[in-house]
Image (cartoon, rainbow, N blue to C red; front, side):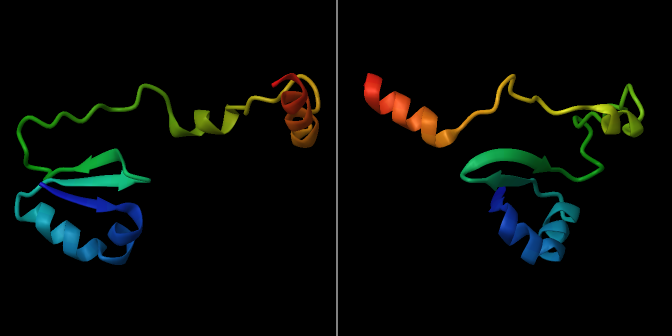
Length: 83
């Protein structure tokens, strides 16, 4: 098993894809946390799951908004006063 961070994977994608074609697994990390595994398509125990909703539904998602305007400076000063 090979482990590679995202930046290196971007730089050397062809190299890592060659390793996968040869049957090796590549684990991708971001900030030292595992975020993905790249497996050969022929691995029998890998199971691909088809999406249950169309990709266009992602466009309908809305972000979370705070109920009130939050000032980082005000929050920091309040924390220092109470701490």
